[in-house]
Image (cartoon, rainbow, N blue to C red; front, side, top):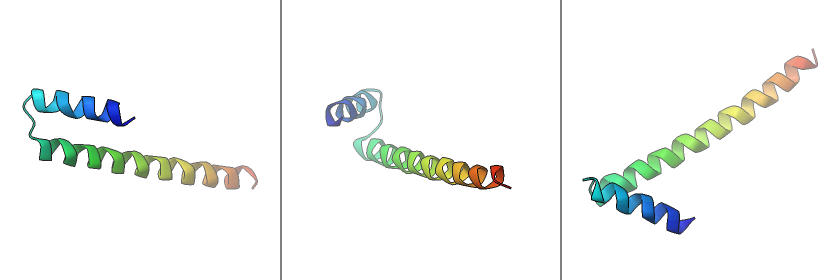
Amino acid sequence: MAGAVSEVALEAVKAGWNPEEVASAMVELADHMMLGMIANRDLARDLSILRRL
């Protein structure tokens, strides 16, 4: 996975982003992905509870 991430980062730098912007964007993307997974987990739990009512 590290190779793929490095490749994306290098392409972003080639496109004009500076390395700090690339790193920040990747951290933000990972954070949003994690928040989405948590929200989906919580929604699945809540729907499961509601189905039992």
